[in-house]
Length: 232
Image (cartoon, rainbow, N blue to C red; front, side, top):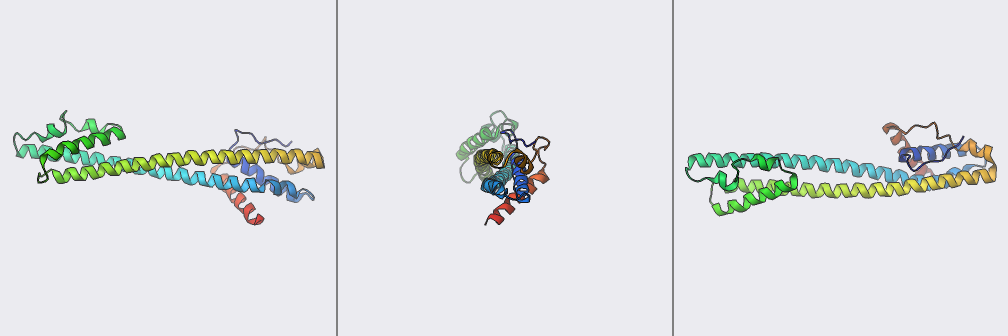
């Protein structure tokens, strides 16, 4: 027995159901219009699924960049701390470690959350300005500032990527709802104009269909694209 799509069903299941309807409607004379009627909605959903996947990949890449920039900044913090310790050993009484790292350690900074870490590095840079441009540590502090800027930029890009995924997911949800609406309307129309038996013939039984795997998802996306090509 034909079953209707549910809101809880994935986009892949929506595409799979639509693909099967399109195929079956072509196999039964006089039923082509029911497959053709849902084709535009399937094309749009297929595109939205693809866009969501692209945005998700971009978000993953952006997070990788954040982690990389954070690791590089952590290494930069350690390097500055070590250079400060070396300077203090060679210049008794300079106490630059305590001036830049009040608790005498760098771990309080490297273990902080990313936003706080960047602010702490800014404070180190501000304090180091008192050393003067000719100070041996100035160049290393400049490198640290550059690493901090890189982390902030990566964080901003990740935030933008997260927002893009939310927008893409919302658009995909809207497209999925449209497929569901057209699918049900076509079924009711088929029952009304052709009778229940014919409607049951061209509308697949979704009750026994499991949610599709990644491979099936790709096949569904491909099917939606093929439908678009046939339509054009």
